[in-house]
Length: 126
Image 1 (tube, rainbow, N blue to C red):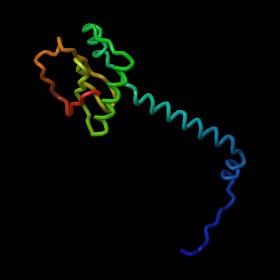
Image 2: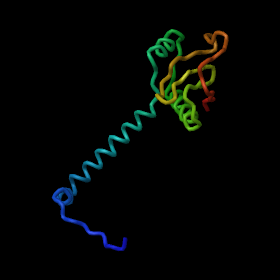
Image 3: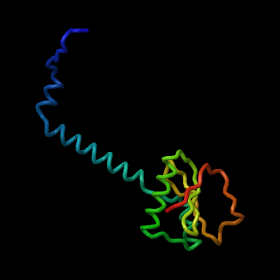
């Protein structure tokens, strides 16, 4: 185990080393793609069902509301939530946390009996 480490001149190593700008560009593109994917992953999406509920119940979310919803989903994700009820003002959202997908949306008038099933967490949006 005391033998020195030897580096052999392999054609693939020399080719990569002779084009440092190509390597840097590839790394930069990989980073940009990873950043874009992470940004997309953090976006909140709405299922078709949720979109119909928002329209039929005349619920609209401002950019601030969407940001609050996204922050609430991030909080519950850190705690291991999978299917969560997000309460924000007089609105309630059932969210698939892993997919960052709003499954349905309710307001105070349309909450029915106020019983929510098949969720594992509740988070209050700040």
